[in-house]
Image (cartoon, rainbow, N blue to C red; front, side, top):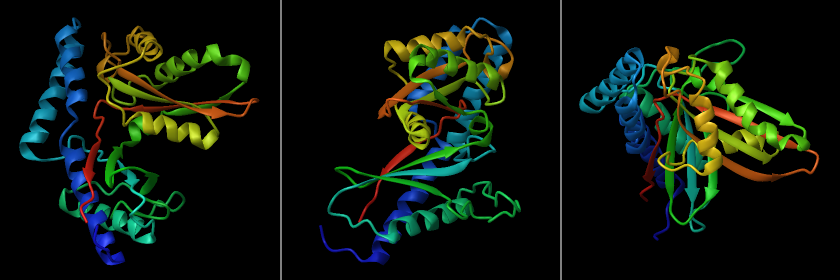
Length: 278
């Protein structure tokens, strides 16, 4: 690879950020659309079926017109994989900020980011500590955008369970979905983080939302089935499908701890990965 300048690195990351957000905001991933189509095909409740039909029509129109899938375009959460040959410098986060600001103006995105205390709006979806950027080593230089809406984020939860309560993990996840009800715009996807520390469990739960949902292990499927038996249904109006999928990520934890986090994602489970081109 040729040597890149800080300016070139910043520009490449900015372009990738803008591109990933443009895709994520207007095109739902195929696995999520397929899960919604399967729910529509199997739903017997006429109200729930109508809601799922409206969701699928919305997805098709967003793709056709190249407009955001939801009026809440969320806050950008960015995941970057960085090869060893690429320097980890401030230019990367600067590029993300620039790309988010450009995407906000061009897509356009609703300017959602405000000061937590004064509620002053930045107008660019950037602000102190925002957008959120997670960087990890990888074989290729990629950038993944996960726009996260407030409706689902606001009903997410974390608990520091006693280590003797492993059997209560499933109950905690299901109770979180029950308490959320129709507020996160179901059918939802549940990202579950188990282990690590207080902060690591929350990140694991969010990272779980990046996983494809067309395959669940027995534990994930069991929780998904439990949530669907709640009968909350699409948009909280009743029906067979409250949860499209459950995805779990784990990390080692202290012998005296059992952190469990549930990050709820609405049906508009937006995510897109692009390569950063240098």
